[in-house]
Length: 597
Image 1 (cartoon, one colour):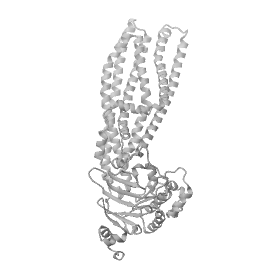
Image 2 (cartoon, helix red, strand yellow):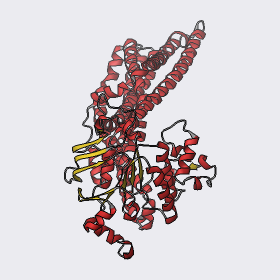
Image 3 (tube, one colour):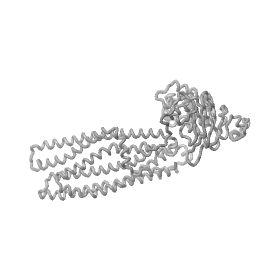
């Protein structure tokens, strides 16, 4: 996928389905509702303590300080200190509980997303950059954590605080309260305007950061090629463009953020001026007590803080919606190779493989396989050859059900492989690829992939049988040697030997070798050929090879040409026909005519 198409795909997602998204987000809070309740109660008690403070100050001023009464004043001060302590304790509980809640919900959502990604077909990964998917499982979910931990419960507390202040102000002095509320329409207009602008900004920021991650993943993975072809300067310019786009998107949100909060403070100052003007005159006229005026001033200060917080929480909510649109869009992707409701299992398989009129295309424009028909008997060794792009590897991908054919049927022991459970099917197919993927971890864990408690005896036997034991014993720590990502400290031949040991440990009934010896030196190739003889014995084997000299020992050779089977026969039979196989053989050995019969 080009960066351009990637950008468009990201930007067209999510058309403000706020209610639907909120309901889906709530599903991840449902298991922790007791924590939500505890956090809410703690926050409400804390808010009540804060609301009672100005009332106590008003009582202290009007009933004790101004009249000069000392009797009972200590009780008011003690009660005020108790309120401050209660506010501290319950605020601590609320912050701890809500952050715990956020981390648990984020953990569940990230696990759900990772499990979903692992179940998607390879066709999905063919079209989606890895960096984009990394953004979904890291940055986007981190944004949701802020919503879960600091947004949801505190919104309830802020609303309670606003309504509590309104009630307290109306109770203290209705006329002064109504005069203060005259600024609310202006506050609402500003809030709604910035709400729309912030949502647009947050969506744009998420798009841009996903594009940066996709480009970074590609650049870092291909760093050796970039340096080899001196592409650093060109990549610098590309990254500068992506980075600058992200900067511009972020600065838009910063601009509105920086403008909104000073405006809120300005409106709060205007409300304070109204109170000082009208309240001050009322105190002078004797129609309002000084304690009520001080309480009003404190309530106005407290009134605009939760409103400002609510606006900030709305920004958090918008950022979370922008992220959740992409997360749920990914979770809603149904590009899966599905099992039947009641899949088939077998105690063992003999290894008969049949392709019946199999057709397949990676996209609608180009047909890769066009009516493939062949049968491989149990224990038979069959090679598949052909030029690059002929469809050889696609046959292997279909056999392992990484993809399903668009037409036709593939069967093992007479049963359509779509009826088998995928995990069971792949346990019985061992594949060794040319591009070996080594995971970070120990050598033994790379050989016994997928087993928590692997058999050390079987690991050693597999390594010995494939010739990998020779180099493994020379590694520091031997089988406990820690390999780096993709096995970068091993040679290509050592990685290939390790992949053979991995297949040998698995002990599958059907063996697939996809160009497995094409990138090794002569000595390693000799070791591999010896290992192959032991590995192939008694197993149905499909061998894809470019070097035709490595497949003379097979029972039959299938030549694929432009997605069709062009020739089938033994090595000698195909040379005698002097067809496409003969031409390929001549091209490879034109300088060694003596080897051609």
